[in-house]
Image (spheres, one colour):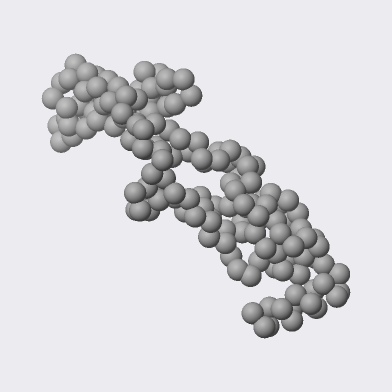
Amino acid sequence: MDGVKTGHTEAAGYCLIASSKRGARRLLSVLLGSTSEATRAQDSLKLLNWGFQFFDSVRLYGAGDAVKSIDVWKGAASAVKVGPQGDLFVTVPKGEAGKLKAELVSQQPLIAPLARGQRVGSLRVTFEGKPYAEQPLVALENVGPAGFFGRAWDTLRLWVK
């Protein structure tokens, strides 16, 4: 354990917030209502060991990794790569990472100009068909406006669509 906050009140009992790191993973435990200082420390240690033993942290995407390219209207480019601004981790029961599914939800129509870092959608992650996490997605590159004819053509296409 490398981070601890202890406390005790008559109403809450002995309490402990503990932090532990193994490799790149850090877990926090919050324990309330213990009957003694010794029990509080032992139970928190058990909780942290359980978390490390039975759960995995899965890195879905790294900062700046392209998740997908999505269509851009009225832009100098017809598509833009999108991804998370920061690393995207989720925690799942050990060995269950294959049950994660990710779905890109983008703002449509996406009209240029777009600045690098501008939010353009989100990544919805489900686990066994249930919502699990949602992360904003940003444009990974700038997309300037198209010329006059390109903008006019896309305007007509959007009217028809």
